[in-house]
Image (cartoon, rainbow, N blue to C red; front, side, top):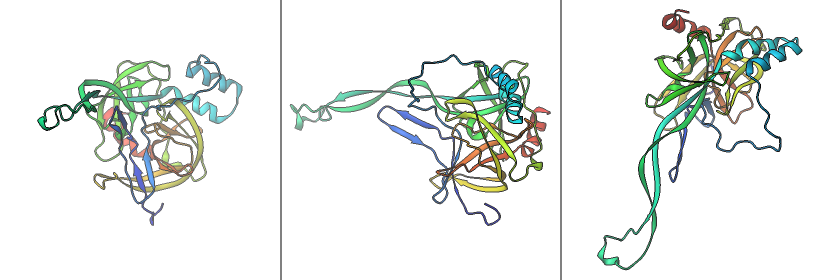
Length: 309
């Protein structure tokens, strides 16, 4: 993907998959030609992994990372320890129809078929219920609870959002800004004293440089870390939904082979100094580790304008 970029398709990781009894599942994609680049929001897995191992109580993330740094004098664990406490999982919830199945005779009101007892299932809405319909990632950029993420993670104005902190604490989040021109958004949680990330300089990235991605992989495994290199710079991706309707273009993005999975949207891409150099946004479905991040330098003007940082 360069100036002669082959057009690729983007599957909007808003990949909100909504399942209702009797109605199957609805998946919203962005497609282009026959390759899908999925924007990385994902619903929680419906089939959890099972093992024969007994559950083990998790240590607090900050404690686990601190122990790792003490035992490994390496730049990567140190960089991850620096950023991970600021990374949050974002859960998307929405009121969806609550339905029940009733068996009814379709000919009950037709005198021609009186006496024929046929029962077929009919779905009736009995109200609504709140369900988790999607998940993404974000990271704290100001200690009083301001969080940076992707716009497509929090694009639904009819949904509610919850931030799950690295400590395990859940906080209700409010969307305060959706960028009209880029896939960026800012959400806010109550409180203060939160750990924050440090912005790096994405203009200094070079091909082959080691980077790491942190996020809520598959909407199930928060603060997952994957490592790779910068595979390309200044990529341009054209995106459109599968109906050919609304379109979106991401320009100047970073390409990386760090394993980035659905649910990672909005999470940080960091260098070995523990500075955030990008925001994870998309991956090519069916590929071997071709993923993309928005350069952090493209974000700085927005955070300066909205948050004075």
